[in-house]
Amino acid sequence: MKKIVVIPGDGIGKEVVPATLKILQSFDLPFEYVYAEAGDECLERYGTPLPEETLELCKESSAILFGAVGETAADVIVRLRQELDLFANVRPAKSIKGVKCLYDNVDLIVVRENTECLYKGYEFEVGEDAIAIRVITRRGCERIVRFAFELAKRENRKRVTALHKANVLKKTCGLFKKVFYEMAKGYDLEVNDYYIDAGCLYLVTKPWIFDVIVTTNLFGDIVSDLTAGLVGGLGLAPSANIGERYALFEPVHGSAPDIAGKGIANPTATILSACMMLKHLGYGDLAEKIEKAVEKVISEGKTTPDLGGNLKTMEFAEEVLKACDP
Ligand code: ATP
Figure (cartoon, rainbow, N blue to C red):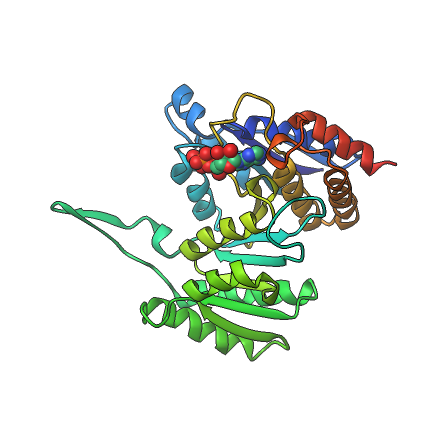
């Protein structure tokens, strides 16, 4: 039995996670689902946004399925990434037929370093001012760059592009760029790099030139929301947080308080995150079956309101289930 720790969290997390589990639990998988609490409501109830029990459960897990948290994100998801050393954040962006967006031929993966950079949390007040320290280590660069190259090889991708700002951030981004080209020598892959600002321009004007993107934490956070927007919005964007020992799967979006409680959140991002989890645990065939079902349902115009349809969160999941078993 594999232990899957399920953390629905706050807001629409509590809607998209049950919809995803409805799909997962209808297949005969050797999974034990264990619920754990974290987030804003957890803070109100227990005085902490990430209880020790939740952290302990995560440390006994085969995988973690995470919904979303609100204001406590820094204390929950950022802390989980650091405590569990989930150094690689993988965020695919792929066009889905039937979803109106700028382009219909986007198919790229953003690999974002997840534990360093300005998100290390070294922020200080100095008198009336504030400073932050950006941490970029050689080890951190090597493992994220290796991860991106290995992923590109495994997924038959051709090109890996580094995004950085080494002309201005000469030491930190300079190190990242140097390690990228050093390590590229060990792989038979096309490699190139852009400054992050130019990279954003190209992502908007000619996204088809990208295949796998590797970048540092803050740039990756921003760029992956941009790529989610390219393929139809946050409701569709899945992600995986991978470390040496643990793995956590979550939609890119947050708790979306504006639509929470209405039952209209799009569960696609979470369903596709669960598919990434299935692949990680060795159930690639089932993952592909569910992914195909999601694409079929959306391309038939059966969608939640964010994509112009009128299905409720759970109704969408039911349609996906039906499409899994024609
Ligand atoms: P948080 O503070 O938790 O990050 P937020 O509202 O600032 O919440 P997101 O949750 O990422 O940020 O949402 C941004 C907007 O995108 C929301 O206003 C919501 O309308 C939309 N959105 C996000 N996720 C979904 C979803 N799964 N389905 C439909 N709309 C979504």
